[in-house]
Image 1 (cartoon, helix red, strand yellow):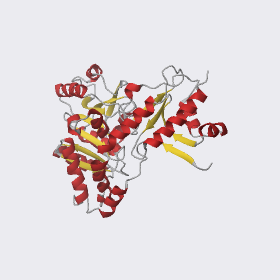
Image 2: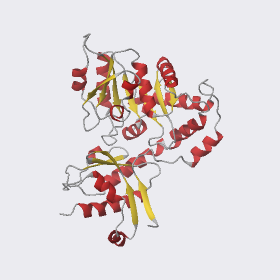
Image 3: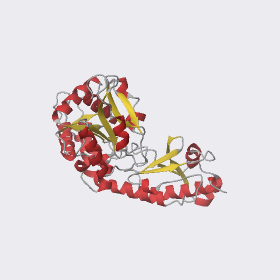
Image 4: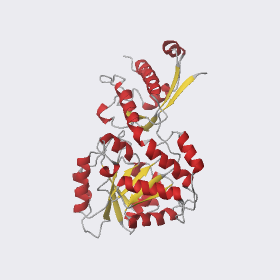
Length: 367
């Protein structure tokens, strides 16, 4: 079919680098980063460390490597255990890497709908001094929370987790792949969000439109440990300034416009009436940043069916809408589909998505 409008909301990793990023990558000053001589990488690392209020930061290829290297730096001994959410990216989507490569055991803590881990659930899982058990050595949080729909951890909750980790003398790692979205939603500096975190991982390719890269931040000594682990994991890069240059542009130009993605998500969520719909549900309170989660509580309509139909155009639909629209969503669980707003999606795209979704829901949810 010709002249089909395709709006891809599967992920904010789908973004293309902006013109300014491409130009910066072309003109980047580079050196050997393994020898710490790439000026663009050094500038990015300094920029991120200052932004997060930490002593140092290290550029790594991926967020998965960032989380893995951070956990391994915190848990450098044997017989250690990490408290991590059962819906977290570290637990679900990183191949159990902390066990594969770090020999670190995870104890999954029930994740609440808002992305938090209840303090009482952390307390009951903290191992006492018993030689039968592994040692609880780290707690990990995720902010914003992916599988909860981009929810933001409240600042007062983070204070409570800080008291927990201090009382047990263990560090706190923040998987902040979309930390900038959290800071924008809270209207505070990123350093405020992570002030009590011993380490932070942020991703430049999720929501910030960069092609590659994440950064791990913490103390000077901690980052030196991460640097050694990065090398062992194959993450040492040479003239990486061509990638770091895009990150610098992203932090200067994309972060200030993230509120637009958040507003687009709210428009999308509020634009379809689902209050009395038994087949598709949506929690408006959970739409806090750039994600919208559609839930399918009944097997009468599956997310896979909904997703497939959104990428089809029937003759009747073409006649009714006078436009061919394909909308791409991702299925993130057996009962959930996700839409993610990002830098490549404009207001006109959101309007087209609403037009399509309203039509498809009207068709699939007939009495």
